[in-house]
Amino acid sequence: MSKLEISVGQFSDAGAKPANEDSIGLHVPDEPMLTNKGMVAVIADGMSAAADGAKASQVCVHNFLTDYFSTPDSWSVKTSALKILSALNRWLYGQGHSVYGSSTGLVSTLSALVLKSSSAHIFHVGDTRIFLLRDGDLQTITRDHRTHTGGRDFLTRAMGIELALEGDHQVVAVQPGDTFLMTTDGVHEWIPDRDIKKILIDLADDLIGACRSLAQTARRNGSNDNLTAQAFTVHALPMQDEESYFNELTALPFPPLLEAGQILDGYRVIREIHAAKRTQVYLVVDESNGEQRIMKTPSPSFSDDPLFIDLFLHEEWIGRRLNSPHIMKVIEPDRPRQCL
Image (cartoon, rainbow, N blue to C red; front, side):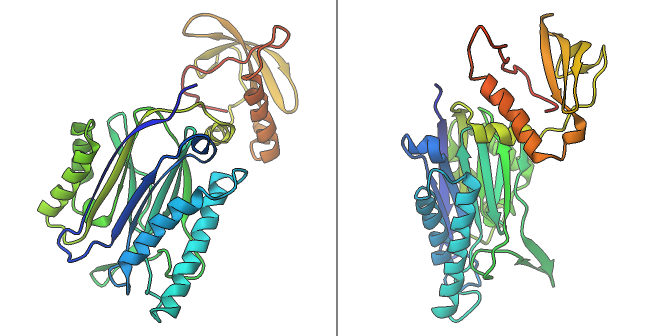
């Protein structure tokens, strides 16, 4: 069984400011915690106008890292993280009012990534960013929660600024070779994405150097803020668990009804074997090697039925784990899927 293998780089500096109000953290636990909960990376940027932005960011990073691994194994990643974020937000909000007497007493951005099995769960509030570098292509996978008014930028969402927390959550399928980069605005606001990509590619074998180079480049370009970057590259992933498997497949569209000669995911339909209300079964041939297979597809009329989708996915999930001469073997896909 393969194991998670990553390389990590971090750099944080006050930059042009007298104090550093940014915080970062990353933790890869030992087994069995790694399998049950995954690894976590967090970045936070204390709001400059807050009474104690540094404390706010430190609490966000420290508490998320420690509290996440204290949640029950039976909780999903999403349930665990959202409960922690909600409680942490209420604490920051309450302390901000009771200790500092202000709605901006303890306020910070927070972006967290939980890598469990082969899925990256992204939780995000504010304008820190998470990037994904894959196959030479860099994309931003978070969106900034801020607005531009009167020549200035203002956060529209942050930890501790309101009693009710509204953040973003998404799940990204992870591949070996992926590099995730987390930055505060003192870095990414001062470097074009093309230069960020070049630094990550040029220093792929030295992520500490890459993070340092990003901060130094931002400073040379005129950044007047704290400078923080954290990156990790995934070299190997563990066996995909059920939650990650379902997350990946439920993002795919339903296939249309197929006819002889049509091709789906590299399989050409020879003929329909059976059609029922819920599913269709086809005899197909693998275009890559000429081998005949049986393909089962879900009926498009059930594309909005979550119970049906769950049951359909469980058929394959269970079938891939059975090995018996009396049961048809479920083939492991060797190329990306376009449909469920």
